[in-house]
Every structure is written in C-alpha cells, then in structure tokens.
Length: 197
Image 1 (cartoon, rainbow, N blue to C red):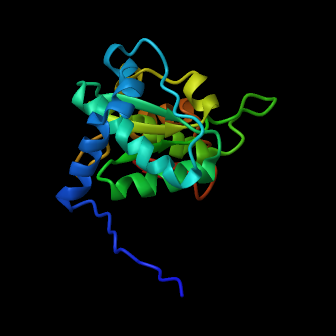
Image 2 (tube, rainbow, N blue to C red; image 1 turned 180 degrees about the horizontal axis):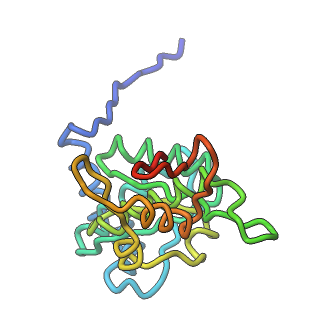
C-alpha cells in the first residue's frame, strides 16, 4: 500500500515566513547568479523553462531581488492578458503588489479612440504609476514598447474637481472637449452656470 503525505502550505501576504522564503530564494546561489543582471539594470532578465505554476513565485523573487538592489520600478512583460491578471493576484499572496498596465488604446481610422473605457483604464494606471516611486508593473510587449505620456505631462493635464472649487464651466467644457470628451446628452452637457458629466 502506498501512503501519500500531504503538507499544509499557506502563503499569506501578512505571514512573515512568506517574505523570508523569498529572501532565502533570492540569496540561494543558483538564483543569485541568474539575478545578478538586476544589479546593473543593463539587460533583461529571462527565467525560461519554468512551469506556469511557478511564474508568480519567480516574479516575486525577481521583485524581492530588485528591491534589495534598490531598483524601484520593475517591468514584467507577459503577452497574455489573463496570465497577467493571474500573476498579479498570485504575486499579492507573496506580498508583492503589481500594477497591471493594459495594452495602449488603439485609434480608429479617423483618429478617435476605439474603446474609450479601456483607454480610461490605461490612463488611470499611468496616473498611478506617475505618482508611485516604487512599483512592479505587469504589461504586454505592446504596452512596454509603446508610447505613453510622461509623468510630467500627466500631472500638467490634471484638473482637480473637488466640492467647493470654483471653475469656469465654459473653460472646463472646452478643456474636456480638447481631451476627447464629446458633448452628448447624458455624457457632457453645458447648462451655464453648470456643467454635467
């Protein structure tokens, strides 16, 4: 008769042993050699021939190694959107928060954005990245190689809307129209002195 041993293994963001496991892996001689390029940042790091189930653990090790080497922003490229989402969720279990940057918005033939909702999500993540000094970013190769506005350009294009602010509705409506909003009932309507979005 063959016996099967089952070991309980929990990975939790709040469990210090999870971070300790990552640090042990980072310092293991086999990983240390592969992680050495992170020190200079001159080349990409490829961990190939690994089972899909290990990808989040390996990505967490890379993030931990980068943190130990004072690398504040780490880009992890994965071309399968579903895989990026799964990696982000599993990396969170290891105590690593990873932002998922969607592919950049595509334009139609007349220069308009094909999917405004995905464009809004893309800009939202870029805005968060512009404000973060330290982060891990999961993205596809198109998002990694594509053009994006600089953090300074994002900051300069902000319009802060807070209760009690006094803004000229005509100027705000023009600014919104300049940034791609359309004057469509239910989306943006100017009824001086009110602007409804």
